[in-house]
Amino acid sequence: MDSGDQAFRAAGTREHWAEMTYGGALSFLRRRYSRDLAGVDVAVMGFPYDAAVTYRPGCRLGPRAIRAASVQLAELKAFPFGFDLLASLAVVDCGDAMLDPHHPETVAPAIEAAAAEVIASGARLLSLGGDHFISWPLLRAHAARHGPLALLQVDAHGDLWPDDPGRIDHGTMMGRAIREGVVDASRSTQIGIRTFHESTEGLEVLTAPWLHRNGVEAALALVRERAGDAPFYLSFDIDALDPAFAPGTGTPVPGGLASWQALELMRGLGGLNLVGMDIVEVSPPFDHAEITALAAAHLAHDWLCLLAGQAGAVPAPVGRL
Image (cartoon, rainbow, N blue to C red; front, side):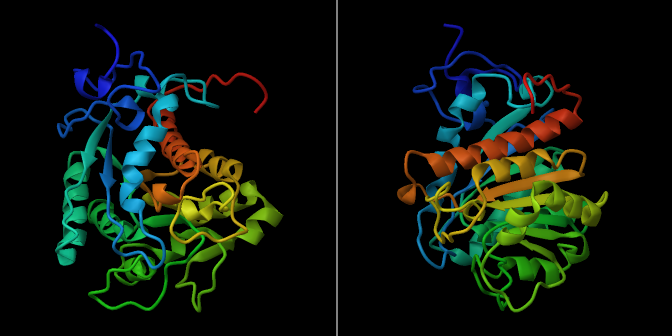
C-alpha cells in the first residue's frame, strides 16, 4: 500500500500522501514522528503539562487534541496562501516531551532541555501546550540561542502577577521572563488582554476592546514597529479568543477575539524574524465539537506557512483576499 499512516511509514520529511481524515495514525499535519532532526526546518513538540493552572485543568490533553484537529489541514494546499507548505519546509513531529508531574521541580528544566535540543539542531520549534507556564522555559531556551526576544503574547491575561523563584504558575511567568532579561519588553507586545494588571512591565498592551475598535492592521503595525528585526517569539494562549470561539480553555473571558481576527493577526506576521511559537491552554474536556482545538491547529499551521513563505514558497491565492 502506498498511502496512509504517514506518521510512522514515511521515510523522509517532505513526503505527503493521501490519508483518511477520520482514520490512521495521528501526528501534527500527518508529519513523520521522529527525533532525528538532520535536515529538519521545524520540529513540532507537545508539552502536556497543566499543574500550573489557576482554574480549570485539562490542557495536558491539548497536544493530542491539536494533532487530531490538524487532519484536514494536511489534505489540501494551504489557505489562503495557495501553496503546499511541505514542499518548502521539512517538518517532523517529535511527539511529546517526557514530563514528570510527580516531581514538579523537574518540569521546567525538562521543558527547557527538550526545547534546547531542538533549537541546537538549527530547527525551529513549534510547541503545543499544555498550560501557559510552559512558555517560561521555552522562552529561556530560545533566548539562550538568539538573545533577548521580541515577544508577541496573544492572550486574555497579562501573566504579570507577583512572582517568587520557586513558583509554578501560569499567571506569573511573563513578568519573570522580562525581569530575567529573556524577553525585551521594549520590543514586545500583548494583544487581546481583558483582565486587569497593576503594571505593564514595559510592554505595549493592546486590549481586546482596543483591537475591536482599531482593527487588526493597526495592531500589526505596532507589533512590527516595536519588534523590528529582533528575534521574534509568538506565544498564543487560546483564551485570547472569545469563549464563543474557544470554549475549551481553563480561564475563559468574554469579549475576546474572533477566530478570523486571530488568523488575520497570524497571517500578518510574515517578514518578522520568526524563531519560535507556542500555542497553549487548549483544554479538550471543556471543548465542544473540537472548535477550540481546530482554532489552535489552524493558528499553528499558519505559522508554518509564514516560515514556508520565508523559505521560498510562492503564494498563489485564488479569489479576492
